[in-house]
Image (cartoon, rainbow, N blue to C red):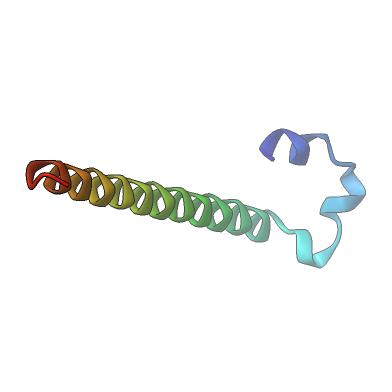
Length: 64
């Protein structure tokens, strides 16, 4: 995304909504949201794998 921002024409940065501060804030927010999404998904996947593994372990231990 940063590489794309470097290649944009100068007229893009002349607009009021595309100031350096707004773009920096948008980049930081996007990275934070992606990090939270990935961390949340990995946590849920690990929890589900542990639950299934533990359930199968107990089932086989008690002669399913």
